[in-house]
Length: 350
Image (tube, rainbow, N blue to C red; front, side):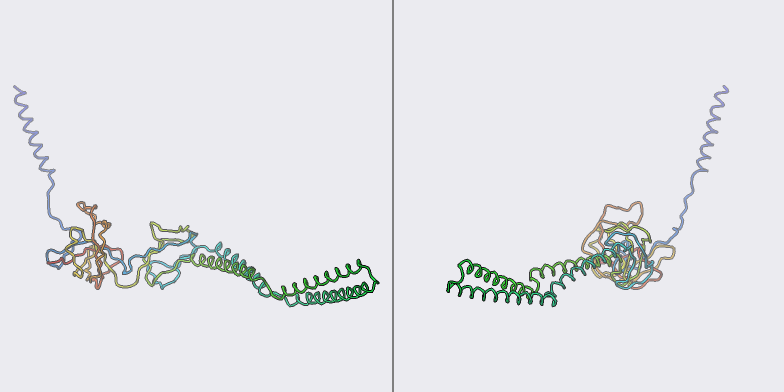
């Protein structure tokens, strides 16, 4: 009997406790204002919305270094305005300077060899050879005279055939020595052989090319601005090792100093609704969004994979976008390179 009375009472108490707990733990819903109000476009319905990125008119120019080395000096900082060919940062150049001096010394050596060949004959080398020619001429005349006398004596029977032959051979030897001396004099007066001069000139040209290459490598150790502009970012420090080639992060980022551009990504589903010259407006994000007045620049003819994301859960990342570029003519507030803006473009027929 007691159990029959207690069980219903316990069930009623448990039911009441469950109802009370459920009522107390049920969250109350209420409408709250977002921390930042979404942009409100003044365009008519049917407009095309896209996400834009603020960039310089020249786009972001990422600079690296053509040759590897240790960074010696960084000459700029973000926000600096630079002129074309102005140095941005320098690499350590002691080895390049030593190589340049070595190549310059080699060039001076080759130029000296060429100058020596071109200066031939030396004025002081000619008189000894001329004297040798005169001496050979005297010996040839003396030998010829002796031969004539012995020949006459032979005809008179006063000399032997052997004496006549000895004098004849002596005369021929003296004449040959005379011809050799004259040939040496002619060779000396004609100067260097043209083939030797050409080889020397080619050696000089090769040495000059080596000097030019060394000078070029030395100049390339200083990275310079390719255009007039403003330094957007510096990601290099003195003492760091700089590698050559394309890097994930640019050492120095430049942009032209002028009107900013907005690169808008329009979903490919809405690409057909965007026409060249369509008016557009943009709004920055934040608690105090600024309105940007835009003018059309161009539509890039290639549809590319989507790279800039809004960050919402329902956003698709496997889509492709059409890029439309606008120029910022006026802004109600500060605008910075790399800032995301919400862009509204008047669709065709809207």
